[in-house]
Image (cartoon, rainbow over the protein chains, first blue to last red):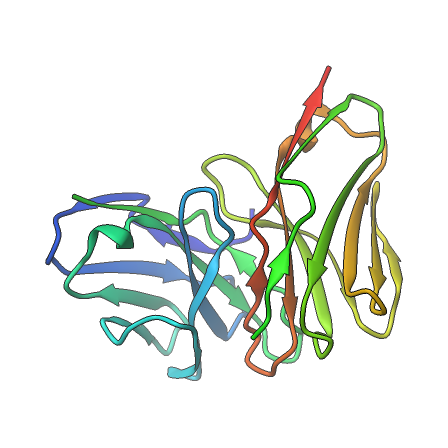
Length: 113
Length: 112
């Protein structure tokens, strides 16, 4: 186990709704990244947070947003959900200066109907 | 941008055999490479990593080989066991923001 916990594990929403996913980083890790993994694909980078600020973003629209809190926990918010947002959302934590080695949680499976 | 591809989407081996999973990347500036194992219902689990200043690194039953000339990466698993059955992803990074670009994964099936 990595020590990265995500909630909820599963979620069903309808198109147009908003969703908030939560992540608790591994102890001592100060950087959190979010990835989207569609069925049968590799994870795709959404964004990364360091010191409560966005520190890099992948090719995702602004309706994907995030927060990092002083205790290094994090949220991923998605507005105006679309059917294609159905995926496994993975949170990963890492320690700045320890390389790009990411430790992943088990993910939140989001289904948009 | 970076793209990462795999030679085979699936690999089936007999228990006890050695497994080799391959990966190709496009960006010659990539300097960090990592392999993950993902079991059903779980997040990716770190296996082994290597930096571009090395061409081989060994762990417990696993070896990663890096050929920067042809931009190729491989994961070797010795004496493959049923518990090794999973999807294996290679991922690469070349920037400063720790973004990893993943391949599509290889499904390894170990037959008893």
